[in-house]
Length: 149
Image (cartoon, rainbow, N blue to C red):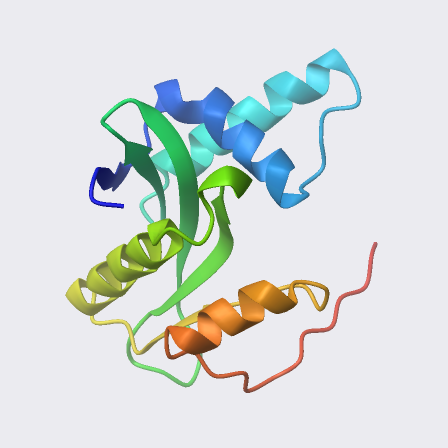
C-alpha cells in the first residue's frame, strides 16, 4: 500500500494500540481498573528509551498496524539485540505490505543503533506468520519455552 506511513507511537495512540494488542490475542481487561493499568503500561513503554513502538498509518488517519521493539543487551555480544515482542496488522489489511513496512522500519532502526540481530517469537499456531517471517529473510534457529508463574 502506497499510502502507508510508519511513525513512532504517541500517548494519543494508546487506545488504538490496546485494541491492536487484543486483536493479536493479548489479554483483554477483565475489570475497569485493568484498562487504566494497561494504558499506564503502554504509556511507560512508549516513553522508555530502551523501547520503541511504531505504528503504520493509512492515509495519515487510521492506525492499521503496530510493532513494539525492545533493545536488549546480551552477555556475549558487544552490540544490542533488537527484539520484537509484538507485531500486528489489522486483519482486513493483512497481506498488503504493511507488516513488511513495519519490519523494514525495525531493520533501519536496528542498523542505526548497530544492533547485531533482530529476534522475534511467533506462536506455534501462527503458521502464516512463520511463512511471512521466512519470506522476509528470518530463520528459525531456536525453540521458545515458557512456564506460567
